[in-house]
Image 1 (cartoon, rainbow, N blue to C red):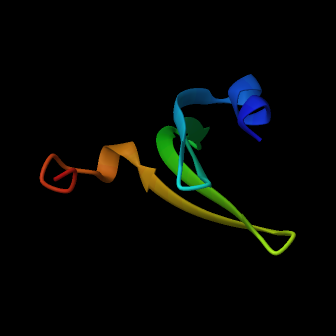
Image 2: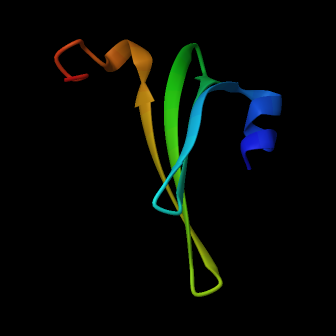
Length: 65
């Protein structure tokens, strides 16, 4: 998944924490840039993926805290 994302989007970070994989990247959406954080967890032969997307222009410095 990390390789596929890196081929099409700007990879910001990827790391593993307690057998959970995190991938942070940016991608274009219309005329804006979106930052995505993807969390991948494997359990009982199943893959669970959650994603959080933020439009960069709409995130203030206060939100980042």
